[in-house]
Image (cartoon, rainbow, N blue to C red; front, side):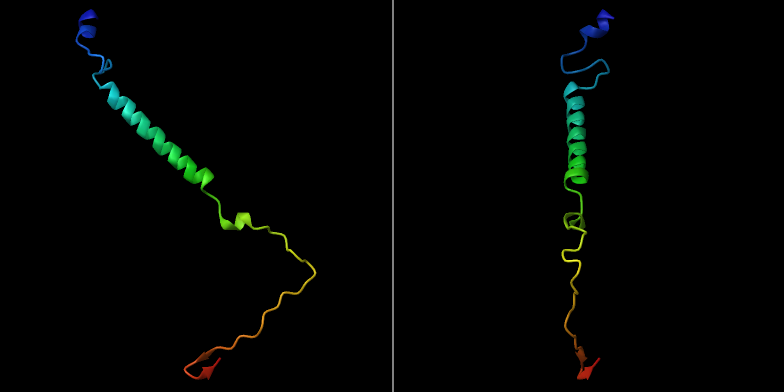
Length: 76
């Protein structure tokens, strides 16, 4: 075992993979997971959730004026 350990440098782990690469891949994974969590949890939601679903004046009648459509001089 001593012979195997002597050949390693401080920048390599026991499998011969550079430690910097392991930390780099881990950091990128954490950043991607954090961005995905932010988009799904904090940035998600729709505008419909922000609007109250209860009517603001339950006894009133909501009306619109008439609408006339004319295409090529023909009124529909």
